[in-house]
Length: 375
Image: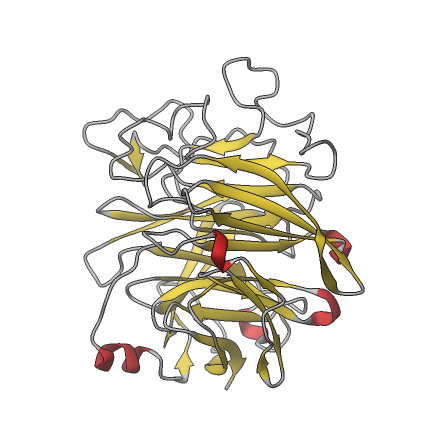
């Protein structure tokens, strides 16, 4: 995540709801042409993340530390407020939220006042949080105020996945990306209800390696700001923010056993970084793009599995914080078979939210919450 200031005129233009025609870079047979619009459904104070909650409602996190529920009339009053416990300095704040399967527990990912990444848990009863059940599951000190990552999701296997950046500054000065003795620069996999404060799944890839942290699922990540699981296939997709030249999207199949090395900081995308040598076990990105255009910071999204936009089904929808254009990828067996530019812009896109019915919401740091609708 990066925070940049733009003129109000440019921001206003980016927030317009625009109809579009799906364009593809594939030279093959033209795909179906979905017509879509971005419809503003609410405004928040610095929305940062969201999750599908009980009763089909979407819960929205605001970076300063509040959580609100999205309804027909907009956002509710806060159902959770930890604003006195976090800060928005740098890239800090309330950065991720997730519900356990069956909505039995709610998890938040935030940086505390000292900048420590923290995962807390709340029990959920009759669709409401029980504040008295709050407990801390996992913490990780952060050496700098950027590249905190912070996204959390439950995978199809029922375990909690946690994304942490390399610790910040620039160029991974501590070498955390390739160091298996730290949780920084990693995607973690834990069982938050299996132990105190959590358990490590026995089939995590580095459990038998005394030189590696057991919680690690995959590594070599710079700032995996947003990741998701395909609700149709279970495949994993990670939007990993680049250093200065390349933005990348990483992919792993649903049957992966973990252990993937995505290369940072030896590699930036498919390219050696500052004279680095490509690791023998490097898993290259499924897609990358350079910064020759307006893009500067990839915002990972979701594979669309809703029913409202039939022609978009199976397409991975993502964006870039600086460009704001919604783009798509068709991925088959780990290979991109088509690229699309939806032509609509959601502003400074900070996150996507997948509702329980598979429909997608787009969050802008400026406060706009849009739903992707058919035209």
